[in-house]
Length: 173
Image (cartoon, rainbow, N blue to C red):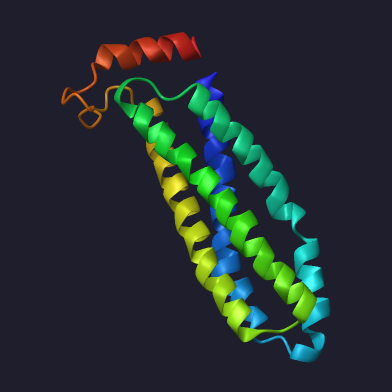
């Protein structure tokens, strides 16, 4: 089943990474340029599109959990956990910091300091999704190239290639 979980995680993470980079470098900076007199209506239209992010984030949470339950075998397990560990941090930043900042903008209108805070905070989500996507690309590479040597495990020994071939036989065939 990992053969499907990993690509699904990667596709969703790559989508969210592209989206968050767009928001970070294009969309949020536009907040500063919207006239204060039209900001509330403009911000309401922006937050109305939340399902574009919320639904994929919810699916990502489920898929990341699935990857934790069924991590990549051998020495790459910690890499699976690192990729999945980004998700709760992204959720925490989103729901504990970013959404309250959006709520302040929705209640009070244009506020340059709050907009600047939102841009700064969003860098953390942007970096974490970028890291997560990179890790998932690496895991997919390992899945598609079973003879690739992994970095040493915690006990200092490299993973046996035979273990990876057995893993592929058990999960693909």
